[in-house]
Image 1 (cartoon, rainbow, N blue to C red):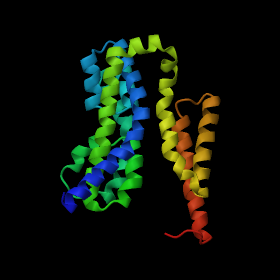
Image 2 (image 1 turned 60 degrees about the vertical axis):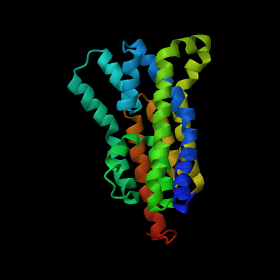
Image 3 (image 1 turned 120 degrees about the horizontal axis):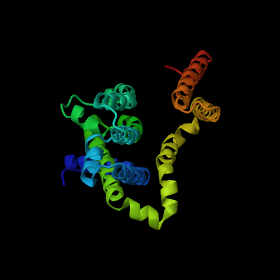
Image 4 (image 1 turned 90 degrees about the vertical axis):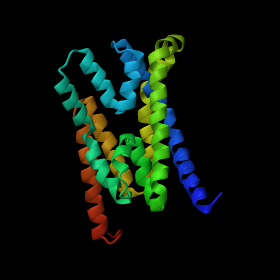
Length: 242
């Protein structure tokens, strides 16, 4: 094997290793989606195609709920786009690490919250020639697991949850748990620790006082504001640079 092939394989293998832990969160939630979609009147094939083509997590649940309730198509499209507006933030944050390849716009179909978190950490550590191989490997594993989980839920979800009712109760918590695992390494600094803790506390308090729909965006805004306030203070004290 040539040195070029070895590097390529290494990048692909690293992408696979980084993405494999995502399956623990993706598959249970995808099974839930498959089951709910079929119960909402979609066929198993339609359900799998939604996961393969839309591939947008929470937006898929909203999509099937709105379609099942008879909402107009334009409203379904608008709401789906609004939920995915966070990608307007994701793109510029990883763009500096991408090459000028014409394939990147197509590959962005595989950019999910979790892949973004992994890419934001891993891409700066890789040489530019290795980044596409890493990204394709990680994204394909995540996408494939989501499609497989959806198919299982659509075909056998009802049987699984009727045989093991506890699974039906715990599956919705798989994705939040995965997010916690992804952000846990950030608790190594005062700046990130304060940001995460304040964001979590604010979200819980808003939820408890009944502001369910606005809890997450308002908590995120508080967290972002605190992050930059702490950063400015540390810069003023000369403890960080840049």
